[in-house]
Length: 344
Image 1 (cartoon, rainbow, N blue to C red):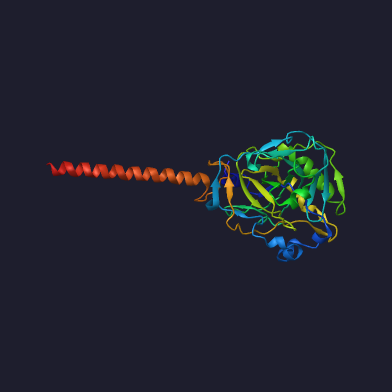
Image 2 (image 1 turned 180 degrees about the horizontal axis):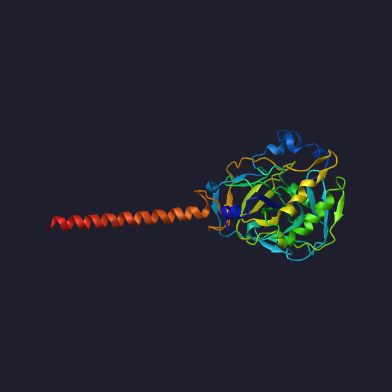
């Protein structure tokens, strides 16, 4: 289903889930920043002014088609209650607390066939329905983005996420997933129900209070049906210290949740300030000539109506061939008719 069709069908709200594979470093030095004053982030960490920052606008004109890109999900289909939910004051975060044998991982050619273990996932969302997206697809802004960042790191090389992040050699991966919010509450997403229930419980807890999951969460249900179509580029974490050591894998197709499930986010409070958490997304950063790849080349992978969408480029090439062929046919016909008149 294209993005245009999705927007027609689910026009009330749009929701984005981003699966991040990194920790937000909760050190005192990184507690002083706010989303309202992002220009001062470089005072907290100079790397926030680095040229390889995230998020970015993924423009069709910048895309490089790479059909070899694949992602393989392991243990994503296994029910697990090994998660701890926490209201950190800026977001809601679910940390994996299980053993290394059952940990969900991602691998595949998109990650040079190395295995990345899930560390945690957290959310970013907008309050105003006219804004919300961190990443944009060819300028398209999702009105509301709940970024569920499934953060993975290379656990074969490093003992912890922080070690992998500090290594600065591409050993952290972030999987980003968009969610449409369906205005029809009958279209219920049971996979997201466990998440929304825990978020509702965190509405009344103090900041940094944690709640362990009691129910079995299946991460596979949080992914879109089509996980073969995605974008890849090298960027950074989207909060200070803005470390530029992240392989971003952004799903092109969205998943869906109902509006009631989305509403749970709107009442989560930062008890330090007494204000509701929201609009916790970073502004767009410049791509600065970075290589941005896409794994797909078909009309159903992402949709949109850009002249440089991978599929549209293909369509333009076919159209040019047809036009050129018709011109040749016309020329041949003209010359044939001219010869007939010359011999009369």
